[in-house]
Image (cartoon, rainbow, N blue to C red; front, side):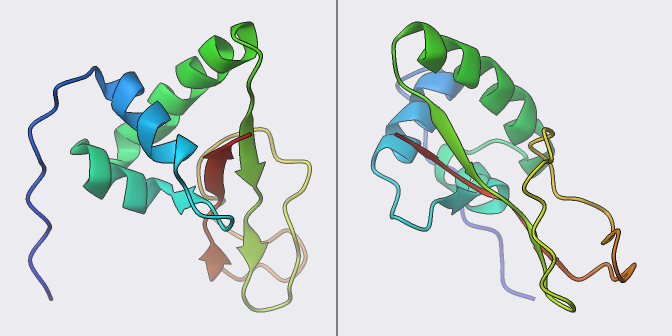
Length: 106
């Protein structure tokens, strides 16, 4: 197991740092795990901050785009899912091999 990346000290708020990372995100977006490493917060905290960031972005005319999770076993795409966390299992095949959602700002 490789060591965790050392979080960099933040000059901005957590949500400001998330917004900066998501603004420069690649076309494929960034997962909660990638965002937690880049911003220096726990992976579990990312979804809560993204919910608040989504409201702020909407007020400013931007939007948080969610690239939905996908089952790696059967290919089911979680298009209708509103939660920003990774699903536990696939409703089609019950597999737990789920590709997590990715995020970016548009």
